[in-house]
Every structure is written in C-alpha cells, then in structure tokens.
Length: 103
Image (cartoon, rainbow, N blue to C red):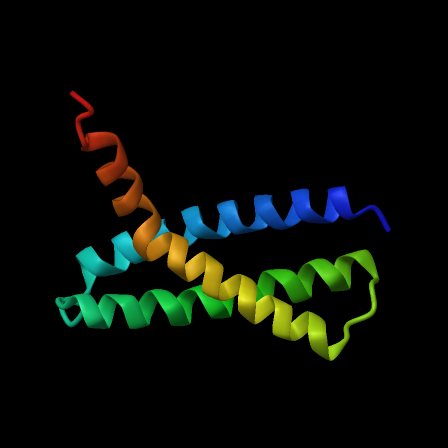
C-alpha cells in the first residue's frame, strides 16, 4: 500500500468535504431562521460533517472494493471532526491571519 497516495486522498477528501459543508451551511443558514445562534450553527456543522464524511468514505471503500474494518469507521469519524473544525474555524482563522498587519 502506498501511503503517500492514501494521505493525498485524505487531504483532498478533507478539503472537498470542508468546502461542501461550508456551502451547505451557508445556504441552510440563510434559508432557515432557527439557526440564528453560533451554538446551533456549530452543532449543525458537526452533524453535517460527520454524516457526509462517513457516507463519502463508505461509498469510496465500496466503489474500490476494499474491506471495511471497525478502525476505518473510527477513522472516518475522526476525519469528520477535522472537516467540522475546518468548516467552523478554518476560514475565520485564515482571514484573521491575513488581515493582521505586520507593520
């Protein structure tokens, strides 16, 4: 097994899922009024990230014909947490980093 390829696929997966979760969250946030607090939005992002990450990872393993084990499912949940963190804080932290002046 080539671990370089595996890590590259994981990074692409996290980036793609983060963008997807950000888009879905913004659409739902503007369409639904009960997502008016930060806590509710964060819970929504975590649930959405976990659901989509597990679905995408399981679908990928099924399409590739790979064997599913219990620790892969745990790994999918960990990747879901990374996606949720990136979706909740990644953009804000990135913008704060670029907006600070180094004068």
